[in-house]
Image 1 (cartoon, protein in one colour):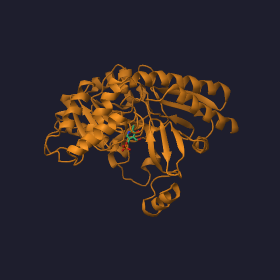
Image 2 (cartoon, helix red, strand yellow; image 1 turned 90 degrees about the vertical axis):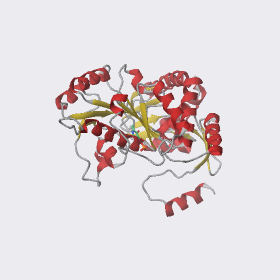
Image 3 (cartoon, rainbow, N blue to C red; image 1 turned 135 degrees about the horizontal axis):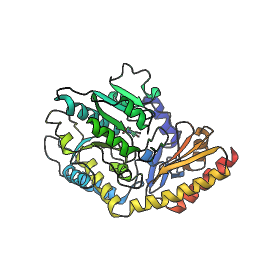
Image 4 (cartoon, protein in one colour; image 1 turned 30 degrees about the vertical axis):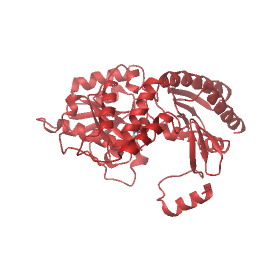
Length: 395
Ligand SMILES: Cc1ncc(COP(=O)(O)O)c(C=O)c1O
């Protein structure tokens, strides 16, 4: 099928919940992806921070294929070897002691919210309130949507799950003003993704950990977008020198195979007992085998080093554009989660880049977002900058 045929069939039969571009991709390798008409694109979006090792990484293909030949599904009624192995790997490389598996970021966050409620449910005074951030994004299911501090995500789905309270991201005084011993958790992204690649001020997470400890409040860290090497560390909290109580992962964890994970310390995880929570597909053979290959590749093949090196190069090149174009106001980010904020809307720029064979993204209206595979080279950055610059010049 070509692009046109695929698009027509989608329009006829798939619910219209996405404003899709008029293209269907059919093949990808590394940072290159090809559409159904045979046109090649340079991918600086990676399926929105999913294909962190690039498209069709050989280690991921090998893990999926060899597992598929052996066994694809049993159930969480039984033990699952790749799930055990992945959990050991995740716990050995993070603050966490235990993992629960789901199938997406929203589901991982649902599990985190349930765990925080359950943790306080047996207390003399159960806690129900959760403080989350304005401009946050935690997913589209009912609890994750209620946690999301964006009206446009929630409109039309009220009444929302109660007890969420929103404060400006990175504002420790705003949190101090509302935190008390009725709050179960503060839910927060280490760097806001959909909200515009917003970084917290220096020292914010240390101050947050302190204030949460003073009030016995849990920190739920949503690393769905920042996790799995995206910011140049395996997990973004490592930049801040503090540990959360609960962390959620999804997107890049299994290289594109659906997965969600909710990790917690033993103390908190103990609140979940048989029957507390479950998922038929959560932690299945294929996704956990793929995720194990992803984590091993990130830790063993210099991927984080490349992410930091090429991330710094990308930031430098975008800053050079900033000094040329006065409508660019700021370049910010960590590792290969980078944004360029402008005074003009970004949609047209994204469309024009696509016409010229480059995939980038716009979020929060005026923020161009770059989330390439972590294996890109400086030559890929030069090519991307060349296309972007030609588009900006014509604006
Ligand atoms: C920080 C964050 N949390 C949660 C989600 C939701 O993940 P999913 O789309 O897999 O449900 C996203 C998706 O963009 C995200 O960026």
